Length: 148
Image 1 (spheres, rainbow, N blue to C red):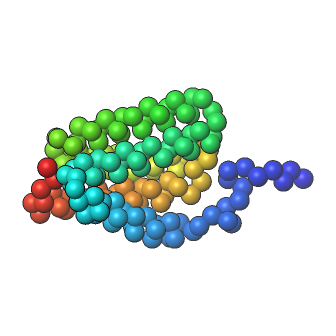
Image 2 (image 1 turned 120 degrees about the vertical axis):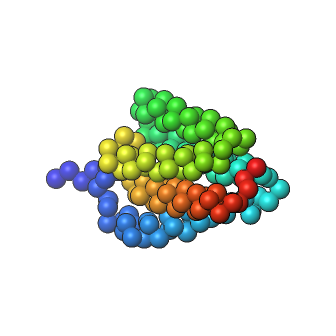
Image 3 (image 1 turned 90 degrees about the vertical axis):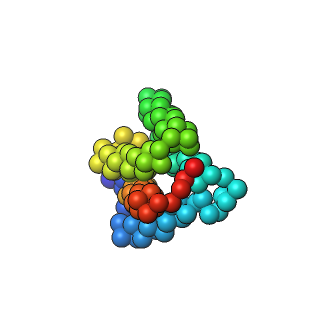
C-alpha cells in the first residue's frame, strides 16, 4: 500500500471551505481598511502595497512547489500585479478594484487547475479576500471616497 503524502492526500487536516471563506471575509475587510492602519500613506498606496503582497505570496508557493517553470510563471504573474498596483498609486482607483478582482480570478483558476502544487487550501481563502476587498473599494469609490 502506498502511503505517501502528496499535497492533495491529507484533506482531513485542511480547513473546511466555509471556514476558509469566513477567514477570507475577515481578511478581505482588513485589506480594504489597510489605509486606516497605514494612515501616513495615501489610501491608493496602502491598497497597492496589499495587492502586491497578496500576489507575491504565490512566489513562495511556487518555490515550495520547486518546478522552475512554475516559479518563473508565478514570478511573472506577481510582477504584473506589482506593476498594476504601482500604476494605480497615481492612476484611477478603479485599477485597484481591477487588481483585486484579477487576483481573485487567478485564485479561482488556481483552485481549478492546481498549477502550483503546494497551495492546498489557499485559493478559496484568497479569492474571498480579493473579491470582498474589491467590492468594498468599489463601494467607497462610488460613495466618493478619495484615494489620492
